[in-house]
Length: 359
Image (tube, rainbow, N blue to C red; front, top):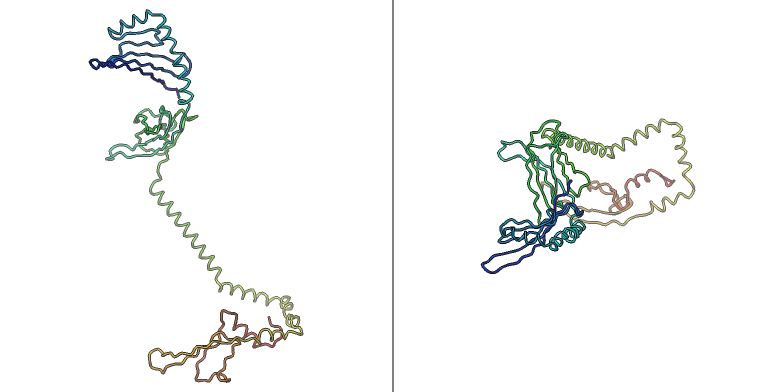
């Protein structure tokens, strides 16, 4: 991007209090680079805001714009020392300060951020508009253009001026009127001093409503399948299915003579003298029960009250009353397994066998 024409001004004021008139001068440098050939020094003289005489390094002398200015220009142009002094300002004043500007100001830059979006004008009587908004860039000079299928668009474009954000950064907005066409590619192109190459942002039209609903439906279907598979996996871990698997495995092993011949001698191989420790360590142990005696009225009120004797946490299973088995007129529940290791299944297993090592 070609650099813009820049300038800086040195202003001198001389105020005349008589009748409120004002006279002042200004000096400025216009430049495109730090080379002398790209620099112009201008010194202007004003009276009541009207420029009446000027010196320009491009002309090399003073030029008057009013009758008073012409007379002053003729007088100053006849002074070789004054002309030499003014002509030297291009090098001594402008070139020095241009170098400072390039080093400390003009070489600094901030990359822009770009947002491309569509907008429907109020009323709906105009074609849709694409808006390319460029934010937070420095320096101010920037170029925003449009491409349609790779060709630059020169019509139906409206752009704002670059305006400041009050933080040394700038923003600009460009609008393009367009009628959407299938397969068309529209792009916003941003060129700025902070960018090594133009920044191209392609317009991606929003997804049609039908396609959006189809995608939502597909996502819902996939989610449903995932939940279904999770349920199948959970059901496969049901204990009843594990029990059915055990039955099939046992049936398979019973049909295998080699497996049966391996397991049948285990009784004799497992029993050894001294296995009486089983009776000592298991069957001879007992747990003192806890007893709760209370009354209960049967439901409906048509039967006499019941006296309940609840016995907890005992071992072994057998329960007697006054040294005798429970009488027939007494209702008693069977001993049940507790969560503290007094296991009914173990007692039933041991009652049907002697103390020869049971597994």
